[in-house]
Length: 172
Image 1 (tube, rainbow, N blue to C red):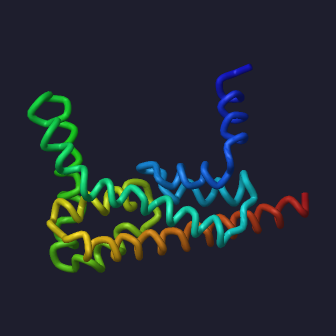
Image 2: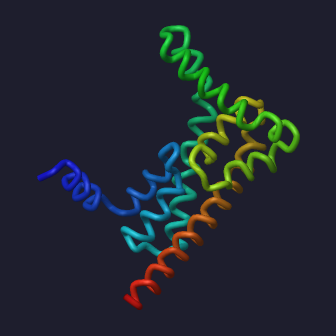
């Protein structure tokens, strides 16, 4: 049995809700990958998929916001790799959002997180909030709004794609 087939069977045996929750918590992938998997592979209800993916996407926000700086401060002086890694993360976030976040803060953060492209989700949005000193009570609602926007867009695009596929295959 190939590794891919084994992993596929293993993942299929895990409760689908947990898989979607886990996928939506992953950096880069987030709910942008979880919603299409839920709707296409698992044939889950669109509203349930959306809600589960939003919840899963928001779980890491707490940990990133409160643990990233302490972890960075602890590991950076101990090894050059960690120093370069955390410098890359923080400098990238500052470059990506400097002008917009300083001027519009909450709105810019929500829009940035809401654009369903890789590296524009809740993970990066939380790092941007940290870099620019936006307090958690202000950043969290903006990040949540952005995640909801991205979730609506991804649900709509996936459902539209599935409908178009059904229409296409009906005439073939």
